[in-house]
Each structure stands twice: as structure tokens, then as C-alpha cells.
Length: 350
Image 1 (cartoon, one colour):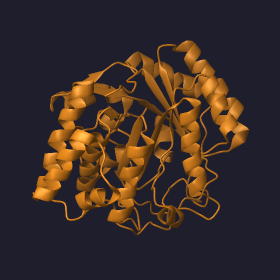
Image 2 (cartoon, one colour):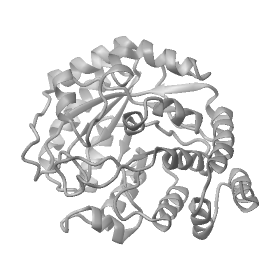
Image 3 (tube, one colour):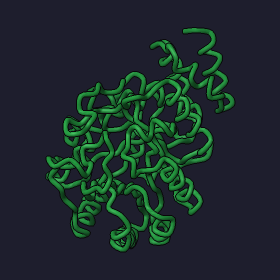
Image 4 (cartoon, helix red, strand yellow):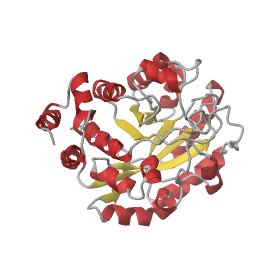
């Protein structure tokens, strides 16, 4: 590895900050030796804060109905080949009961954007989950809403909110989204969520069409300055029924390197090894953990819903991706020296 890269990674480990140009330098011409060096540091940094714990989140994909038309997403409103569904409150509560019995203490309610008309239903659902499972955290990942709606969700008992920014570069954002979606509004939502008191998660795709070293550097600088509790990144994977259906998938290796860099930027970050990693590489989740991740989100959704929530081609939802196969996940984590814990898994300081 180059002496320059080593110096930058060493300084990032110590100071948790670099300039935009220095982040770009880390990503320009990086090697496997660079990634291995960063991963070793990142795993050590994670261990200092969280030990060998791997936090599990029970993912419930509540609906694939979406008003947005993002160019990369399989559930975009223009996709006529998408079979739409919406889980009832009873179905979602049933998923939570099954998850609680399996040991999950965080439930992630994820779905397409449906607008303000669903706010009352979302709040009622959060209230029900918190009433029946008071020792559990509820994470929402339902897209952009007005500040008042986020406040209502928080007042109902929502603990965390995931809203991936997808890219911190304005021009790149607009190239991935239709004209009716606004980069400024997406960013404002993130700051609103943080001000309200949610533990906020952001995130970005790796290898999305038009992405450059400079745009990735902006993502890293944004995570550094925004200081989220969580950050979810994964390789871009095309969906056949989108305008980007013929584009190549993002790099697993670059994603792993970026996971390590993110851990060095924020040692206490809750950092998932995403489904997309496991989709592109059989040991993707394990490699993510060795690169510094500490969260996995097995799927608690009803099996027929999992088949319909197709954000990209080949999305995994069975085997160790399934909450019902938690024993397999525990075995796979144990094989790399880590331990799945029954815990809310809140962000720590450090």
C-alpha cells in the first residue's frame, strides 16, 4: 500500500476527520492491501465500542406501494410489473410477536412512500408495538414526510428513523431521481428527524450510475459532519424493470472498503452488513462484519410479501436472510468470532 494512504488511514483513525480531497485520495486507486489495512483498523475500532456483539433487527416490509419514481428502484410507481401489497396492522403485529419470540428487540418497519394520508395508521401501529413490546425499539423507514408527521411518529414512540440520502452530491441525486424529488428536501428531512430526537440513519449506494470518486468523497464528508447514529450502505444492484436495468452492479470490494472508512470516521456508528452484500457474494455479510459492520437485519415479513418487495434483481430473503433461520446466522457469525445478541442495540458513545 502507498505511504500516503497509510498516513491518511492512520490519521482518520486518530482524528475521525479528513478533508474532501483527502477522502477522494483514499478512494482513488485504492488496492486490496489498502482495504485490508482499513478493515483491520475498523474491526478493532468497532470492538472497542461494541465488543464482539452483532445486533439484529427484525425487518418488516410493510408495503411496496410507492408514490416515487426513483430511476433505480424496483418498486417505483411506473413499474407495472410490480405486484403491489400492503400488510394489515394485524399482520405486522403477528410478525412482531414471531420476532420477539425469536429474540428480536428492534423492529424495522420499511416500505414505499405513501404520503401523509397514512400518518395516523403509522402512529397507531407504533403505539401498539410499544404497548405490547415496551422493551423493544421501533425503527421506521418510510421515506420523506413533513416535519409535523415526523414529530407525530416520534411522539407515538418511534425510536429511530432510516432515510438513506443515496448521494450527497446534488447533481448526482437529480440524475437518479425524477424532477419532482428534491435533494434539498431529502437533506432537510434528515436534519428535521435529528432535531426532533430520532436516532437517525442515512446511507448511500455504492456504484450507482454516474457515481465518481468525488461524489463518494462527498458522501463520506456528509456522514462525518451530519454524525448519524446509523449508516446503511450497499452496492447498487440493477432491477430489470427500471431505466437502469442494464447498468452493472456496484463493487462488493469497494463497499467493504467504504464500510471500514465509515467505521473510522465514527467508531460508534451502527453499521449494517446489508442484504445487497449477501446478494452479490455468498459471504458478503461475514465480509461486511470483518470490515467493521455490527448490524444485520433478517427478514420478518410474511414469505409472500418478501417475494414482492423487489428493490433490485435477485434480492435475498431466505436462508440466513430470513429471521426464521436465526440459528444459521448465529453460527455464521460465531465462525468469524462474533456473537449475535438479544438487545435493542442502541448507538453508543465512543
